[in-house]
Length: 265
Image (cartoon, rainbow, N blue to C red; front, side):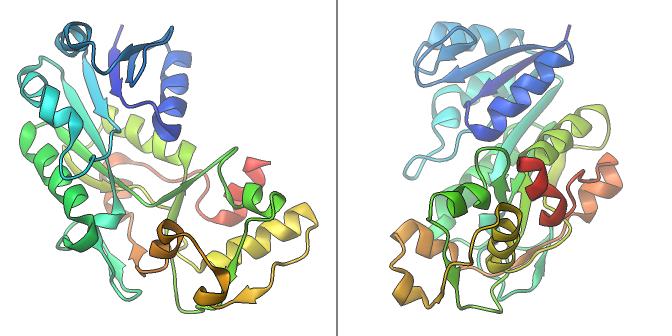
C-alpha cells in the first residue's frame, strides 16, 4: 500500500488526503497539534519515523518569516528518505507582477515581498532530484470561494478593469498532484485554470448564481481593504498551465470559474 506523508493540513492538503484515503492510500498527516489522523509537527521522533517509512512525501507548509519550517527542521531527513516521490506546494506569487502578461515555469522569479516564498521554492527544488514543485494560484472550492464572500456581504468589486488573476479549483489541484505520481518528470508545474480574468467577473457570476444584487463598484481606496487583501491587487499576471497538460496528462475538470463556482454550491 502506498504511504503518503503530508506535512501541513490546510485546505488543499486536507482535501487531497481525503481523496487518497478513498483510493486506498495510507496517509499520515502532520500539523501543529496531533489528532486521530495527524502527528504533531514538534513530535520529532514520530515525524522522522514517518519520513523514513513514507513512499511519498508532500509539504504544503509555507515559509514562516524568512525560513521554511519543514526544511529547517526536517530537510536533511527528507533529503535522505527512501521515498520514491516528493512534492512541494508553492505559489504562483513567486512570479511577482507581470503587468498582465503570461508567465510559465521558465519565467524568472521575482524577489520583493515574496522573497521567502521564492527561496523556499528554490530550496525544495535543490533538495532531491525527484521533487515536484506545484505553483498554485488563487485556490477556491467548497466552503472557500467568492460565493461565501457574497453570502456574507464581504465581496468587493474593485474598479481595476485591466487587473487579471489566475485561479484553480482545489480538486483540480489534487488531481494534478495525483497525476504527477503516475507520470511526468520531476520539476515545476503550474496548476491553474484556463481563464485568467478580473475578480469582478467571479463576483458577478456568484451574485447571479445566488440571486444577490451586485456590490457597488469601488476604488481601492473606497473599499478600505485589509493590507493582505489590498496586496492581492498589487500583482497582475496570467498563469500558463500547458506544461502540466503536456507532461502529466492533466486537464482541469473546472477549466474556468463558470464550471467551478456552480460545483461549489
